[in-house]
Image 1: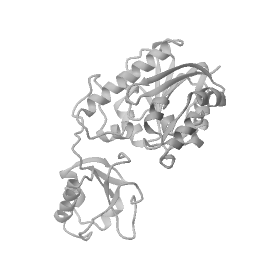
Image 2: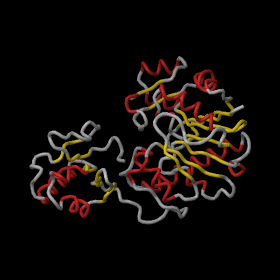
Image 3: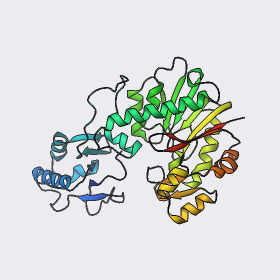
Image 4: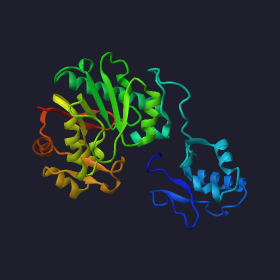
Length: 334
């Protein structure tokens, strides 16, 4: 629910370390006893905020030991990011939530969802960057699809795999005859999309296949910044699963890290692996987040990756996805 790199306070007793295994998680309260008055605990929260803590997480079981009224006071003082049966999460950072729709008339997601999608959530111009990057990437998708077969407006059905909070998918709202679907493994973002983007349908997927769709369900499936964050054991299973839901003659479009990103991010050992035509992965233990980063060299894409799912390479566009400097690889199911 919160960006994985954010520093957060998690309410936990000595015998209840819930959430403290997460990167950047600190036990709360830090110095005051758990039964201290609510104003004392709020002062601890404000002190942590001044030290750069971005979120407070109160699991529901913390109601058993934190003072009555503290959760309500926390809600009154800060914006609730999540408030359900499992926990309360409040934001301490300065990024404001959107107060109205975007320029397309559709609702805008909370900044934390943008953080999960793009890795940023507390910078000036956050929403402007969110809309502009989605616009550019939707344009890049339109162009490579149109120049290699029927354009997006002529498709019966398309799937945004790893749709997040609809950064790209929202740009298909005006397709007159195309069934638009999105899938993601984050249940909170899928729930938000279902409420905010009613022109499309949404399903929840797991970290590993399968999807809920039947065989040959889509003319086009695309995945932007998804295979760039899957560890090696999940790469081919997901590629084969996406190929399964593409119709014969349909297309699969992926954004991948190529030479530009490899030069910027890989150390010498991984760069040698990449230059030898092998998949290179950094921070593999954080699969599914922006931290786990995967690099697909050209020979691997054409000689290993696409053939493993029985797909043909139609086109490659270096540095085509503007937001991340990723390449586009367009594949076709025979």
